[in-house]
Length: 109
Length: 113
Image 1 (cartoon, each protein chain N blue to C red):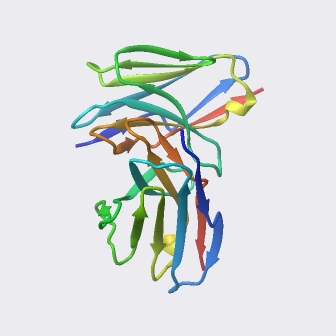
Image 2 (image 1 turned 180 degrees about the vertical axis):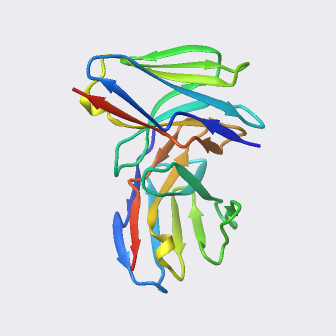
């Protein structure tokens, strides 16, 4: 079946680094996406990986290993505004996304 | 990228009534989707809105309860019919251009009383 796993909740300190992991088992693979969702708001796109390796975008980086069915989102120099849920999603065909349950990230001063 | 305008942003409805949610995209998109999201939970796909034909529904969702229209490449509606309190949720429309990332409307927070 289709399955995406990520931790339910994580806590980190302002200014620190946090890594949010995502493992997936899907019938197909055509890219992995990370989204950020603040409470009461719609998800916003953060990153996209389709090839193995690290994609860096400012304070955020995303890594993919297709052979291991594994990705992580790395957030550096954490700010209070980074408190949000982070959703991992896999595109298993042409367009449709399979979503993880999301990781709620709590940033403490 | 694309900007999706979704309305209404929120509504409180009586049980047994119906609510239609609209999404307008500022440019032509390849695919449009409708999701439901319970507070603190992830996204559940209701259906894929197909342009000019019947939507493709996911398991557990039926056309009689959630009729969807997509008359052109930039507009879609979702109706939540014969509502009950269990339908209280956030409803989100989403769109994809080509093989890029998905974009989302602002969401509709529905409360059924």
